Image 1 (cartoon, helix red, strand yellow):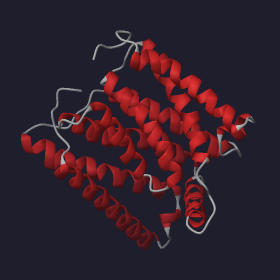
Image 2 (cartoon, rainbow, N blue to C red):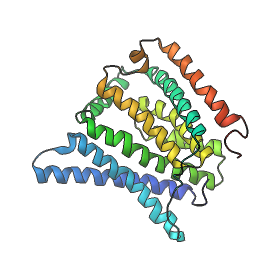
Image 3 (cartoon, one colour):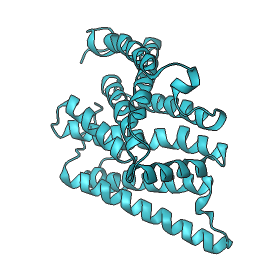
Length: 271
């Protein structure tokens, strides 16, 4: 990875969790305060959701920078370099293929029952609140989320685990798992886990956080467009094809660029 050698160990992990809880608490307090000041409950608005998200995810990043990186006299910084065109021609189809696979996988998770039924209802209601403002939705999902989540999960957690001696493949898998867990529902967990594997691989191979940010934004933009401008909830509904066909398409679209990007030697990078 880049020259910075900060590590994510048990202490750093606990610090990041504390940072998330502190950020969420501050966001809640801001919502309460603004609602009281304006004599109107703004916590149901999409713009507050975006503000709360920003506060929640910036806080653990600042905690890590202040308590881990700066204590050694360094500053938290990342490589945002661009790459040759051939890299983009491989990573975007690879990401889209995994998006189709994730779409199929997510549909396997039940949305009814005593446990999952109420949880799915809450999940859809939260998205409905966000969709009240398409502009806020785009800002939150296509700009804020890719930047902040890639800094946190790939730039800090994955890179920090590798610096701490974790095998790269394990660090990619663990950061993807944590990425899924933080979404706090089984439907987004499944998709985030699978997509997180691609994002982690791309960051590890290219050494540029910009690459994973662009892929993350690409995924979220398509998802946001589906939610805002289409009645379809899945790619299979949008394209009018069976889920099994969608899965096969996803595997084929993913595996070909994956071969040239991650398996075939000396095509892009020498590791």
